[in-house]
Image 1 (cartoon, rainbow, N blue to C red):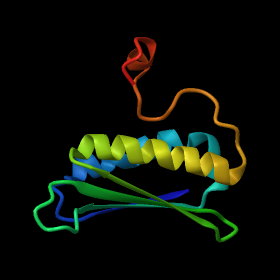
Image 2: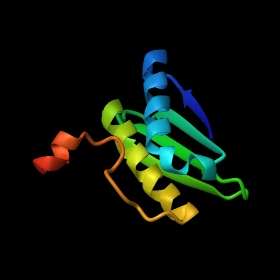
Image 3: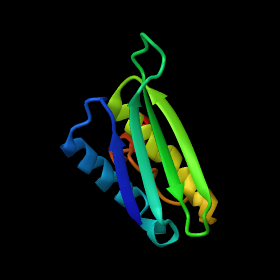
Length: 116
C-alpha cells in the first residue's frame, strides 16, 4: 500500500504529514494487502471568508475501484482524525472486511469514559 499526502497552503508541516502517513498506515494495517494506494489532499476551503479546511481521501483498490471521502472541519487535527476514521470505515466496507476492533485515531482512554 502506497500512501501519498498532498498538503496545500493549510500550514501542514512535514512532521505533521509524516504523522498522518503513520496514522494511516496503522489504521489500514489490517487491509494493507487489499489496498493499492491512499491519496490524501488537505486544502483550505474554497469559499471566500470561510475558515474551514477540506480533506479528501481517495482509496484505490487493485481492481481499479476508487472510494472517495470528503470531510470539512475548522481544526486541522479534528479534520485528519475524522477523515481517517471515515476512510477506514469506507475501505473496510469496500474490501468486504467486517469492522472489528477499535476505531482508528481515537485514543483508548477516551472510548473508556465515553468521550469519543
